[in-house]
Image (cartoon, rainbow, N blue to C red; front, side):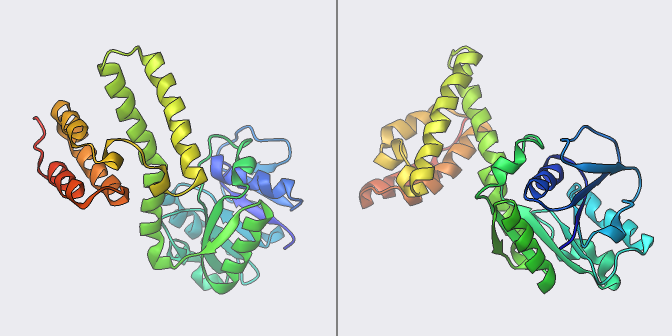
Length: 281
């Protein structure tokens, strides 16, 4: 491919653009509103990108609910043609989000990095070794795989119909881990720990947990009262938790129980405890 154009210079789009530029590709970036970007990136600003005719690949890196509108605007501009491949970066949407461009003859698909980004500069390092799921038209999938490998990611093909379930899994692993960390922080503060100490302590605990996960499987990494079949401790936890915290503790506890290697009798009693405890209002 001769050049790649990225529409949307946010954390994901700008990060992938930077990774591609550092891999030696000719990369052009376009955004609606001007912002600071690394010096390696050549950017334009305003309505539609002025470089469509100069690139072979267009990557739409905008929020999910804006992808269809961008595709419609590009179709109205009548510059996208059979020589183009158009990809979006959504984890939950598939090729159909680009349907306004279907009549153009361009190859359509998606490329989703299974990774989080805090800023553009750090993104290329985070892309190294990350999984990238790809789907769409045959040529689009091949181009997406080439781009993924160029920035150090490992492409994995996924069925279009599976993307929603796949993305839900990604949300559990990222966004909901953050939410669970916040619940843990609240409970430690409610127990009397200073907020700074509570968060410092949890950061160390979280690092240890993720190191264990990186070294093996979730089953290998599981510790705590459910892994030991400790009914008394779990019962005490449920006695002091209420509302959504109690519901979440029981729901996650039932998942942890599927990983625990405990005696059948302990498992039966733990199942009863996790299913039958009634949280305080």
